[in-house]
Structure formats: C-alpha cells, structure tokens
Image (cartoon, rainbow, N blue to C red; front, side, top):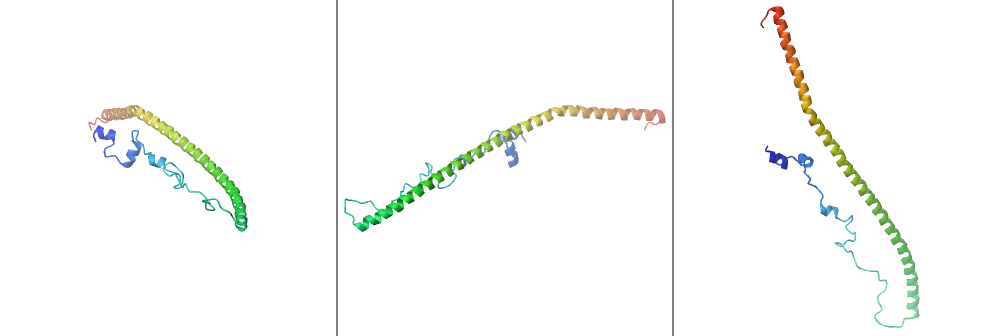
Length: 169
C-alpha cells in the first residue's frame, strides 16, 4: 500500500477509520439541535397560538335575563376555581421543566467530562505506545547480543570439541 493511501485512509476497514480519523468527527448538527420532544416549542415548531374561550364574544351591547346572569355567575365561579387550579398546575409543570433542564445540563456536563477524560486516557495510551516503540531498538540490540553470544558459544564449543576429539565434524 502506498504511503498516501496509508496516511489518508485508502482501503481501511471501518474500525481502522474510527481509530485513524485524523481529526474528523461524527457530530451530526441536526441531531445536536433536534428537539427533546416533537411537541416542544422552538422557532421551527412555534406551537399552537390557540387560546381558551369558554363563552363566545358578545358582538354588541345587550341586556341579559336573570337566568342568564345567574348561569354566568355560576360558570364564572367554576372557571375562576379552574383558573386557580390551572395556575397551580402550570406552575408545577414549569418547575418540572426547570428540574428536567437541570438534570439534562448536569448529564451533559458529565458526558463532557467523560469525553474529556477519554481523550486524556487515549493520550496516555499513545504516549505509552510511542515509549514502547522507542524501546524496540534497545530490545533488538539485546536480542542481537543474545544471538551473537549464542553463536560465539557454539563456535567455541565446536572448537573445543574439535580439539578434544580431533574430529573435524
């Protein structure tokens, strides 16, 4: 394989490409910016601008009967209590959203720490790999020294055998 193919990834397996990515990334912007839920209000999903309307708008001035006024008073009392309960519920929903956001942010901080520390661990692994590669010539010299000692010993043994036995084997 040519140097250029080795450096720039020709004929690499998927695993090799993950390891030798040369600064590339797999961060998909659309996933990072995706909503946490399809119904969340965002500029791309502005939501529904509808409202609550219990009674129709009175289009012009008019007189009401006693029965109509009594019925509206009862409905007003019911809706006032409903509004109070809705206000409590919406306050609780907002607090839940704040709590969810806090958990979300803290989890992302944790993931950032994991990613940062993973990089530190990989740097340490690379440092060790470089150190070990740097030791290879020393081990090669030691191995050659052992081979030479073995060869020298065999030569001496053969010389001694020849002297002792007079054999030129």
